[in-house]
Length: 102
Image 1 (tube, rainbow, N blue to C red):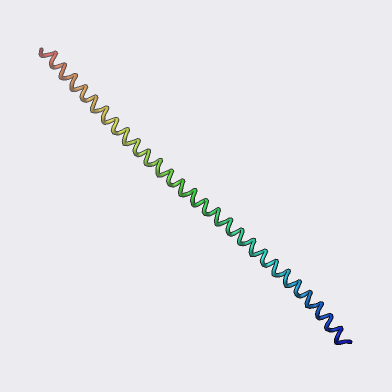
Image 2 (image 1 turned 180 degrees about the vertical axis):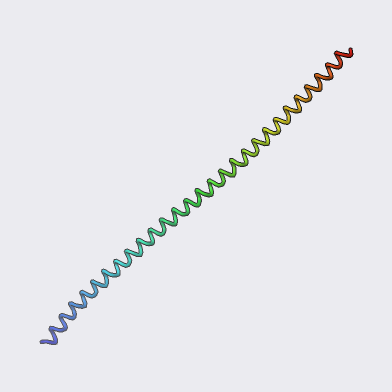
């Protein structure tokens, strides 16, 4: 009878150990899943920031290129205007000479 009672308490103790082990495993798995979800969120955020940074760099390069192009166009226009004014000036001088001498 003592031996039978001892077996019954060991079965109960074994059941408590199994429940405790399952609880520990569930807690560990929950922690691991939480870390994985957090890691994926951080990775996604980092990827979005990198993408935004790359896009900003492209936009800045385009703005700089446009500014350089605009400056070159302004310089070319200014040169054309100076050339035109010089042509008008020399033409006017030629007409002045023609009027003066004729």
